[in-house]
Image (cartoon, rainbow, N blue to C red):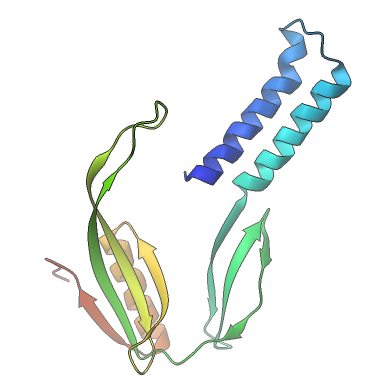
Length: 161
């Protein structure tokens, strides 16, 4: 769960706690104020937690949509998918460190990401998709290359497939 989504879940729990607090905490705050604060927190939390983005590809009509979704409603327009000549899978490794903050676990280490690059005829990247799993990235790349009738390149260290 990423930072914004975690914030959404925390707001939901905080809102539910505020709404339930009159059952077990004596307070000078009016019931109306508690309902407004609690409900607002839950609503904002639900919106944040249900927000995401991605890319849709319509292979039949040869179009693509990079979208942002808020509560299931996808926002953005379809555009024509350029000709893709090559689907390439590469691995990228980098060192990552979380700064100690008292909440998140402190993690340091080498991260390996697998990226699928959809390359145009002049080998310019048109789209990039990131994966944490090498097998998933390779399987998706094979499907994309077959569907797009493109060349598949696997530029992975130690890949035997």
